[in-house]
Length: 84
Figure 1 (cartoon, rainbow, N blue to C red):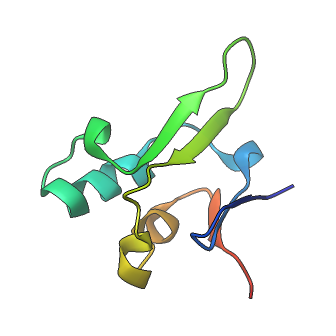
Figure 2 (cartoon, helix red, strand yellow):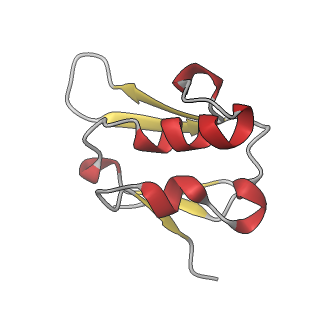
């Protein structure tokens, strides 16, 4: 089941996530010019006491001005675009 990320047009299928952080790396490269996941506008965190990952977006996330690089670079299809 996909979760919708409010007002960003991004859907998340957390059961597909492998925790590779490619989305965070790509986001940080766009926002800072360097690979630094701590500076990304998307956060992937392991769910405590269980399997799986949670995806959260900072208020500063602008969907890469319509490019949605996190979606484009996700190798597992975890992130997708909402159909409108």
